[in-house]
Length: 226
Image 1 (cartoon, rainbow, N blue to C red):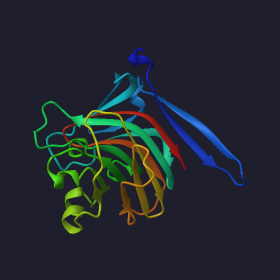
Image 2 (image 1 turned 45 degrees about the horizontal axis):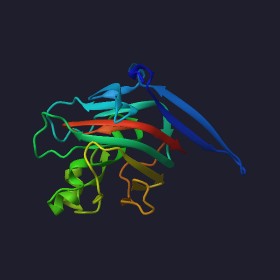
Image 3 (image 1 turned 90 degrees about the horizontal axis):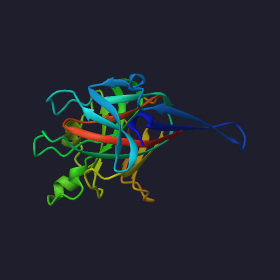
Image 4 (image 1 turned 30 degrees about the horizontal axis):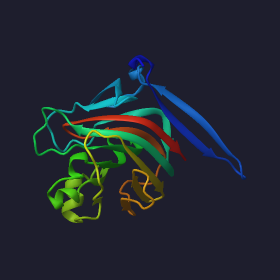
């Protein structure tokens, strides 16, 4: 299959009054990358591990605290609901050895400087250092709540362990309701991470593919169900 025929499916399932559910499917072609709203990332359609995917690479410079690196998906928005995606993440070849990779989903995006985000750190999942393992899944909120602040002020509250392998496809699901969000990884019944006090005001906003410094990630099969 040629990369030019790659596409990303965003499925939006809207609940109507009464027992019936209406589903509208919105597809975003990855070879039309000009439709994605990019901030500090570069993107390209590729075939990755046998699947059509969008490669998203960090392009925000050397700052390890820059959280505003995302590709906003046009036509996708959500206040409360479920977001599912299959992703893979790893560090770039020139990333410092101590960097672990950051890849996830930003939601309730009102602009590149205002959003909630849940993500995984692929190289922490099977680290021999238990503290690194405990930082495998994380939450941040932009602006004002980077991982350093949350970790220092409330150790362990906004991050958790989950088994991960760098570069392998990983399924994640984020369930959002009011001030609460739950992260599920690889189809498990129980959430890996629970956040009951999301930091930004409750609002309807966009969905974005998010990566952190020194990261190359791949995304496919994004589904959104308000």
